[in-house]
Amino acid sequence: MTRKYGTGSLYQRQSDGRWIGRLPDGRGGYRYVSRVDREETRRLLDEMRRERDRKTSATPSRGGERVRDLVARYQADVDPVRNRWKTLANNKQMARDHILPTLGSIRVRQLEPADVQRMVNGMIAAGLSPRTAGNAVTTLSSMLRHAMREGTIDRNVASLVVMPKTPRPHHEALTPDQLHAFIEATRGEPLWPVWAFMASTAVRPGELLGLRWRDLGPGDTTATIAGQYRTVVEKDAAGHRTALVFQRQATKTTASAATIPLPALAREAIRVQRAKATSIDVVFARASGHGPLNHAWLVRRFHDALAAHGFPRVRLHSLRSSALLTVLEETGGDLLAAKEMARHESITTTIDRYASDAATARDKAAAAMDSARARRKA
Image 1 (cartoon, rainbow, N blue to C red):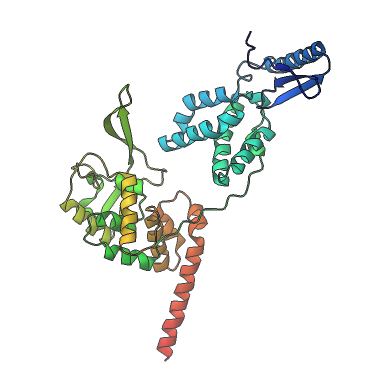
Image 2 (cartoon, rainbow, N blue to C red; image 1 turned 135 degrees about the vertical axis):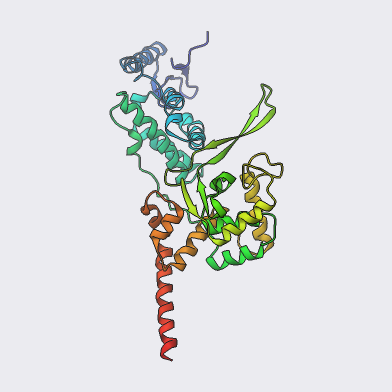
């Protein structure tokens, strides 16, 4: 007869003839007992199993649920209310690839900091970055906070884990001089309006692709950043693609939604784009006119343009950073101006990302003043 998983196993060790009882502990590990006598070993194994089952059956029905049950419930009832589609996809990936394989079978009430630490250490040992491990812990922590709100547990063990240091990623960007040279070098090319608009407004790629003709003000002097598009591939029961649907989504943050003034370069980009428009709705549309340009395709074209004109390879998103660096340089390091252009919710975000560049811009401004005074004295 096949034994049910969780009831343990009994076997005789060949090396010395002793009997070994092995019982899953409910945390991804095992407990063992060893005796010379087979029946004595079985009795001790049964006692261990009854002790384990007493601890788990004494908890309320929801408190006795396993981590995998909490994950499923949270993803169905809570996550869709709190997060946007991209975050939902990231959370599902974190749960599927890291949380469930390591912690899924453990009961929520029995989850310990050591269990979460084991997951983190395993991820680092597998070569994953501290940032990825941190994302997995953050995802788990959100679920455990929900369990605390329900009264299922009294503490969030994910908050007690020792995390490896996560260095802030440094993404290269074109300098203001390189940005100007790139815009001039690509002038006349099909995607020049895209590069020019991003480089002069610091909009995010998703915001650029979500721009509609109706969002432009009179004379193209302003643009209202009101949302972006999510591409959904619809499939039939056999898994074959049947349609490509573009769903309108909110902006990244509340502060991101705003009406921004368009500088001369952005107005020129819109003028060029208007002359070859393929859609009556979307500004930067596909050649077919059906929906905005594909983001991944646009990234590849951007890298091709950089290589073709001898510029270093940087992210498409870095055009936003380059635009903000230009503002900092021209304003002598005015972080408030950079915050308003970036549409950050808090100036703390601007300081965290661009304070060193602002300091460099202020040094350059001071040096320029010294140089100007020296010329006048001469």
